[in-house]
Image 1 (cartoon, rainbow, N blue to C red):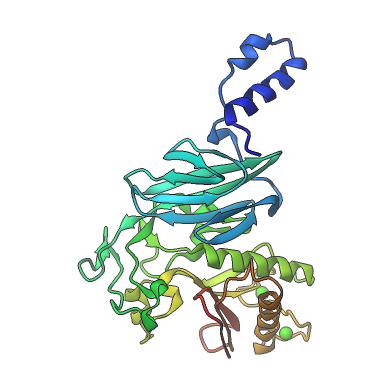
Image 2: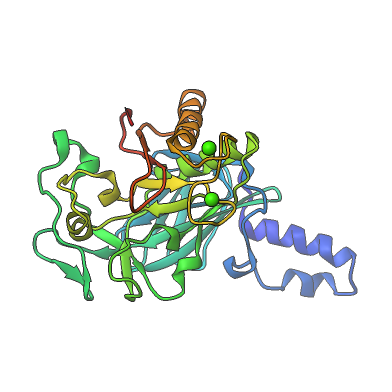
Length: 324
Ligand SMILES: [Ca+2]
Ligand SMILES: [Ca+2]
């Protein structure tokens, strides 16, 4: 059942009024709950599910993106509160229409005592082949021909506009926006990137599985998240279809002891490829057990070399791929 926010407010105000000397009338006249007073539930997951962009999620913090003026469709048996944009509901489907300018918005879905905070990034438009950079940030060009004709390999039409201070935005319970920026042009403000919801679901599910296995970690170290085509070519990659270019790939390791390399996951007192294998095997187990929180995609294992330690590649390309 969806309780209209105003009724919920009046009920809450009346209950509060019992405990205070405030008159019922002034309690009813108190301001409506506004998004700035809400925050996501403190647990990683809540007792209800939303569906956004085809992804079902019960994460207390989740993120999606939309073009300026575009609609975000959120299927949820919950109230929606947002200070910005234009929200309406029909038959359990909320439509949130984005403002016409790029920026970061917060939508709160509340049910009973629980709240999901959904970040919506309104993207800065990008015309592939027409633009090489945005505000001095080199993007380069995407292959206009999508791999195998698949939609999720089409050149993006916009990027998240990461202004100074946005690095610390929590985009999933254990992940921040700044963890995923491209390594090019360090310190350049603003920067532009893509972070796809399917990847966030997978990283969060894998982190929770790692914790359950007894591997301590507050997050993964994201060695490489988003890459522009410009940067991907600059580091010597010849492929034009890397999922890093599309914001749904991350090269990760657990580094809870913060020494800059993978932790000793298999307990043999060495940091080797075997530790990446252990993390990848756990990812494969999650892939088998939890299709909701593990959208189909790639799991790759990488050994250490002269410039990096062992790591695991995770992506949400839409079909299974395994290597390494
Ligand atoms: Ca470590
Ligand atoms: Ca080891």
